[in-house]
Image (cartoon, rainbow, N blue to C red):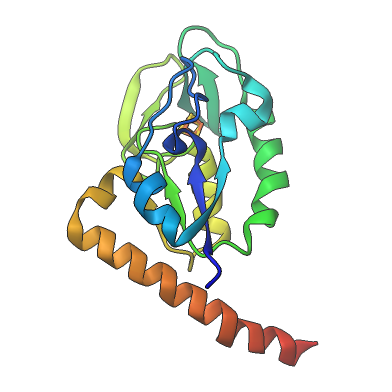
Length: 181
Ligand code: SF4
């Protein structure tokens, strides 16, 4: 049986791509889920050209919209991140699910700190810039944060949704596409 393609934040695979040169290895992902899933790993910050190590960044909200700015200073990496997102999101249509790293201004799915123009925290219900684009582009795709997979119910639910989405994509969505051709 071929493995199901699932996206994942690269640092969860143990690769040293975090801003400080570290990783966030998830043994559950690499030792258990990898038996069923074929991971496509993406580190938005690295692949947007920010390098390793790199200055930490955070979300800042301006009247014109959300931006990604270095936490110590004003360097703005929004254009680089948006360019990367525009390029990569269309290539993810074959994925059947996605596992994101929490608390990241790029990959975090929920409860991400949002700052004002002066760098002060104004709310904590933001979403990482890459995660937001992923969820908007593929609203039916099962997406979870890695930390939440420690919860048995959430983990089982996520895995079931990945298998169901895979089944639907192979059968229903495939047939609809064929009918249109
Ligand atoms: S959380 Fe996302 S952007 Fe940050 S190191 Fe991990 S993969 Fe890269």
